[in-house]
Length: 151
Image 1 (cartoon, rainbow, N blue to C red):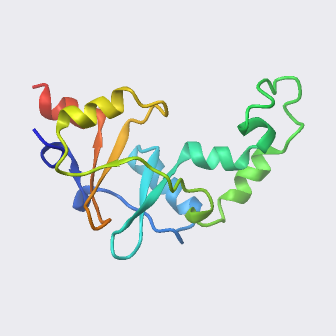
Image 2 (cartoon, rainbow, N blue to C red):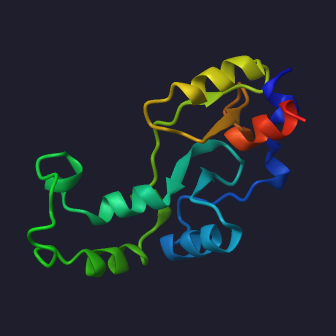
């Protein structure tokens, strides 16, 4: 079985554009029960993804995200996280999206994509299927693998 047989097709995906306001993207994720969305241009070329994790990461100070300060419990008010996160809501998706995303092709085997998802250091639960021309074709989630292969 191939990725094209188990992926959620582009026509069934919710996508955002680089100039979408982050608040709109977050509201879309919340309303659909998602934690990330693919980012495409107007021709559906895959540009990356925006996730709630990415947005939070952008709102945190670099000394936390780079691992220099692992325990911030001693000073919860030291950094105005809520203010920074609120400010992020008016920015565009391109300011917080992740551009270097591992992708697969629709022609890859379900075994290959399952292996990628299982051993991902990023703990990815979704991987995007991109055509050779760079157009987003769909997405494969761990749940979609189970729903198609384990019946």
